[in-house]
Image (cartoon, rainbow, N blue to C red; front, side, top):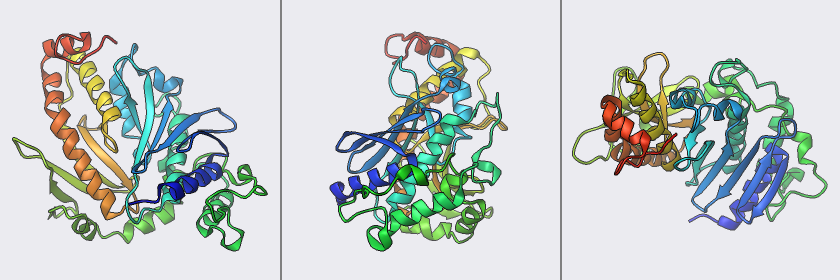
Length: 353
């Protein structure tokens, strides 16, 4: 059981430091904005989840409903930092940028809020469709921000009321603190930590111990990955838990192994279905690997996930695969069904783009 009221104050304080411009819409919902480019992200706290949501910038919107290619949005998902994803919230809706954080025991809420905010801004400001290359989370830099100011903001948040920290006893920011003075100009790479810090966290990670603590049976493979059987009915499906140099701990399960649909209708229908799945299943994003053509569901957990986060990720992947993977395989191979899905035929749940 979490102290929802106390967490709301902590979340608001962290957002104010990270974003600078924060408006409270309801006691547990905030609109955050960047000062220079006007990106706006809505953050909602449910008590069990922290939900980040923003309209896609024009470069992302170009890949949304009415224009396709949905495929490009799935390929962009593979390059977005810290589990941020392109998603369709509803039939006929424009493309969104989203991230979901489960509130679990031992989670460093302040660190995660700051990191996900930085990742959302990175996703909104960078061209992940590759038309205008810009600094990404993979370049090992701090994204152009003032590292000292950013690190100082995080430290003062964690200190709370001690040492004149930013958080007062009731979780509010004292009036004499100007949060914008400690806001980085751009989101740091690796969710707010340096490349060295990120790698040090990965080097110290015991993946097998983490999975054991999550209480999911696993098999260790020779390549260092862990294989975990998902909870699916009527079949057998495994996920792999891997350590990725750019994303940290990632849990993946395949949908299509390098079998890129050849028919345009199949690609569009599959892309539409999976983007809608991204809007329904929390934590889970669908991606297309541009190099191999593989299509998969994945959950990105970063460099320091908790066992409860890993357990949530495996449960979320189980639900996503159970409810969408088989349908995805049909759309990838049957052009007639794909066309009916795109046209919104009876029983398809589709929509006219």
